[in-house]
Image (tube, rainbow, N blue to C red; front, side, top):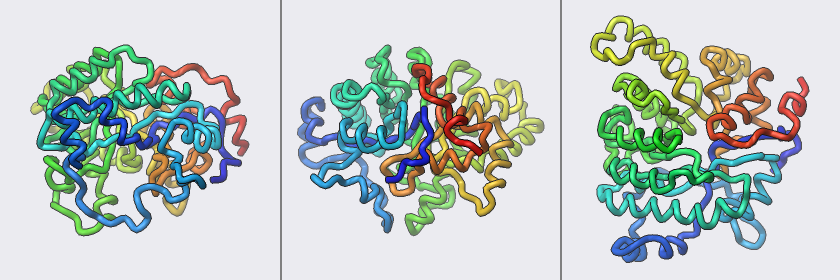
Amino acid sequence: MNADASPQGVIDTDIHQVLDSRRMTDFLREPYRSRFLSGSRGPGHLGYWNPNGVMRSDTRLGDGRRIEGSPETLGQYFLDVYGIEFGILTGGNLHIGLSPDPDYAAAYVAAENDIVAADWLPADGRLRSSLTVSPADPALAAREIRRWAGHPGFVQVMMPSGARIPYGQRFYHPIYEAAVECNLPVAIHPGSEGVGISGAPTAAGYPTTYFEWHTGLVGSYLAHLISLVTEGVFAKFPALRFVLVEGGVSWLPPLLWRFDKNWKALRQTTPWVDRPPSEIVADHVLLTTQPVEEPPNGVHLHQILGMFDAGRMLMFSTDFPHWDGDTPDFAARALPPALRDRVMSETARELYRLPERTKSSLCETHSD
């Protein structure tokens, strides 16, 4: 790992910690503990082959430990190396939220949240965490959110982007109600499309390869975003902020153009959408950088970022330790200088209510 060009004051909004599965038995209640010990981990995967592996091979240390496997190694070999001021943990078994058994799913994610609270958050003051919930039963998810109300270490609610129905539908509103009550944004993360009760991962059906599946993941983000706006989620919950983690960036402007155009002609069908959808999205929705698009001409990415309010809506993420992650120095170089402070740290600092930065700014660190 080379962090020579890493900026200071970085806030990473997508770090995948790996929990010690042995700790599950300390928190998972019966009868679910016995089920876990028997080998049940949820609805599984589609079986696509990634030739790179999901986890980077270079995160294994000489003594066999993995960097993502403990807060101590994560702090020493990742946060310290890249000068990361705060890191938002997004790991956990999001696939479990698509289990056909909502009680087991709720118990499983509750145990994972307990492990994070006991083992990870107290160990390093730079760490904050997502609060994982299973959306299969919104009442149980809302109860889990309220169980941790006021805990300073949990800064957002996390759900899988694979889903049985679009996330704007009223079925899910108890989750948003609890999140707003507890002053937490809600986030979704990809990777579970096509798993469990979510149905086919694309509107056209099941892809053949990981390459095809991975490239098309953004389709679920388009569908959820359209649903959230047209179903009136942000009209009903005006304080709600919604984070689209690891979904890319370049698809957003053309979708908003189409959204606004259609709203002008079809707004009678959704009277609660009382202003252009692009304005609603700008006020309520955020994205993370990874996997940032990499056009051959970097100016084209800058142009895309100028087509929406990227300074207010975009947050840096590494997706560490996944195979296609981005380092802080790489992402900062790809951004227009005027956006670097906002994207690399300050938008996330505001959303997650993190302490003010004391280090030098990105603009001072990166001279152009």
